[in-house]
Length: 207
Image (cartoon, helix red, strand yellow):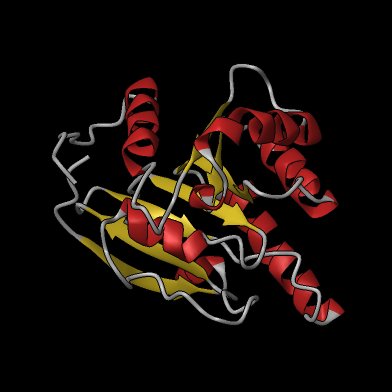
């Protein structure tokens, strides 16, 4: 996909701060330190649009990135940060659930999981949560450069089994270091655009 423009529009903590223009939204969620900000930067071909923190648990807002003036990538708060207080965890959970439950122009929620590790109980709970609201056809396996390509399928099998994924659902590996996986992920987005009848321009271009 040719990224013509991308910008952060708002960092929201409540529905009254969400964009009101009605553009389609596609959300990404995952554990703290799973590499979500790096994945967003890779997708948008930007170095630091999404801030990559050295400390996990820093994303405490819902961040809306406007892409090509046509749709939003939505960065949901990371979960599973062990040093967060119970009240912080409860607040993040409520923030995510409110968005998932009530957002009418949300078309897909994508779970990010570290390809190197077996999904945790928190990952399974989040995946079940996403499925409950009718989403979750794509899982992004981050940090794919940390393992050999020959071992991808073994790790995919573990992810599928632990999350209870449908055979039809996709796992797409992505490497922010090697800038790999973004094209395959955008191809899946194209399928989502077409399936949902969204008038979003898709252009192939060298990355």
